[in-house]
Picture 1 (cartoon, helix red, strand yellow):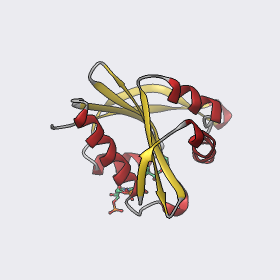
Picture 2 (cartoon, rainbow, N blue to C red):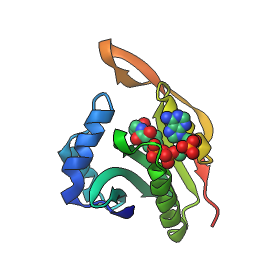
Picture 3 (cartoon, helix red, strand yellow):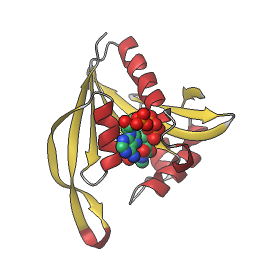
Picture 4 (cartoon, protein in one colour):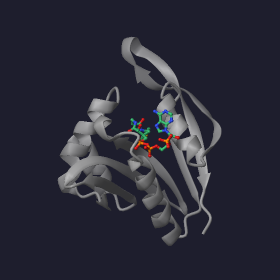
Length: 149
Ligand SMILES: CC(C)(COP(=O)(O)OP(=O)(O)OC[C@H]1O[C@@H](n2cnc3c(N)ncnc32)[C@H](O)[C@@H]1OP(=O)(O)O)[C@@H](O)C(=O)NCCC(=O)NCCS
């Protein structure tokens, strides 16, 4: 498995995976806009040259937030999410960032299990945040991981 920085050339396949994963997924231009921001960074993970997943985050004022993370369905439960998260944590340590935040939809149990397994603690919820079919709304749950240098 190989982890390297996300570049503008990766935006199409990252967007394809995001759109296959999430209701109202982000498109290629959305990812390009993120990566053009000075404080947004990403990694991709590949196996034998095949794109398997990505993580995108923002660093502001000594804190970081995961914007999105995704692993292709055929590569799930192989430790790739863990590897991307560990690579992010090492990068944040190098930047002396000690707090990593994220929000996840209340109906996304697999991601909540993944983040809790990785040491994130629940902070609370943002009510009625994510849109679902038939204009239904679900809460966003906020999580924090403290990173020790
Ligand atoms: C959440 C996600 C990134 C996890 O990636 P992954 O590569 O499959 O996760 P890993 O193989 O590294 O799993 C690490 C641990 O997390 C937990 N975990 C991961 N997926 C889980 C699931 N579906 N159910 C329960 N626990 C899970 C387990 O403890 C797992 O360890 P184990 O396999 O030894 O039991 C992946 O499921 C995904 O892309 N989901 C869709 C997109 C998404 O929801 N992203 C997060 C919101 S931004």
